[in-house]
Structure formats: C-alpha cells, structure tokens
Image (cartoon, rainbow, N blue to C red; front, top):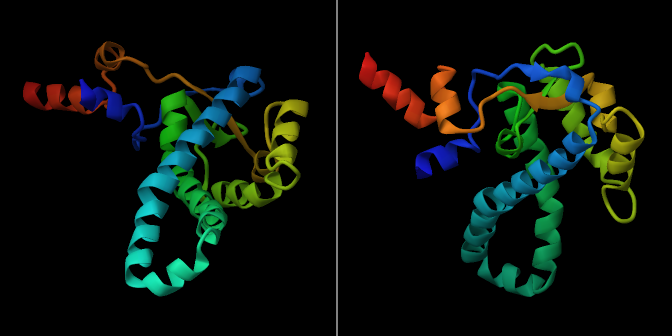
Length: 191
C-alpha cells in the first residue's frame, strides 16, 4: 500500500499522453501551485536541509556566527536548487514529483516531449517569475492573464497540461502501465 502511495510522486521514463486542451484551465494553474509547493518541500527537506546540517557540523563556528541569517540564506539557496531540480526532471521525465502527484505534464506547445533547451529556458525564467512584492506576482499574474502559461512557458515554447495517467493502482494495472512498483512486480511475476 505504501509502495503505491510513494509511486504517486515518482516520474517514469514512460510519459502519459498529454491532454493539450487542459493547458488553459484555471484548475491546472492551481494544481501547478500545489505541485510547486510539493517540489519546494522536497528540495528543502531532502536536498538542502541535509547540506545545511553537514555544513553546520563541519563549519560550526561560522555557522553559529551567522545566527538568524541562516534561514534567509537557506531560502536564497533554495531557488537555484529548485530550478536545477525542475530542469533535470522536466527534461528527462516531463514532470517533477509534485507534477506527478497533481497529474500534470510539461510538454512542448505542440504536444511533443519537453526538450533540453525548453526545460532550461523555462526554468531560468523562474527568476523573472519570482520578481515582485510579494514574490510570484509576475508569474502568477502572467499565468492567469494568458492561457495558463507563465513567462518561462512562453519563452521556452512549453505548456503544462493534465496527463492521462491512471490515478489509482487498479487503473494502472488494467491499463498495463508501469506507473507503480506494484504493477511492475505483478508483471514480473507473470513472466
């Protein structure tokens, strides 16, 4: 059971089919926000926090001298970590764990898989999207004012759409998709 729950976050090389007509749906924009929150949490807790802990152990005096600035510095470092994480996963798999969980997929505007260049451009534009007070003003306003695409999507030629992947274990098994470890294990037992 826990295996299926964890697989709800794992991208696979086999991408589900995109539903291109959902690109401008307002619920996709909200799901993108939830996916970003999941991905930021993963980046902070699984990537950055262990690094902070290791650095604080190795360099204890400078770490203690920073005092309360450690949190502010960690949030500044989070953005390049998040941009790199998103770039690699969207280029290789078309989605991050947050997007997998929310049923989203990054594809080119014509429905082809996201390319290396497109993923790099759309994630570099995260820095532009985060401008404003409070942050995210430009990116969120652009997504709401246009067809659901943020600035990075426009420049990179990408769209974020819903995917057709089954959301439950039985649906994945009946569709013969390798989206869950349980489905892969069941398939291996049959062979």
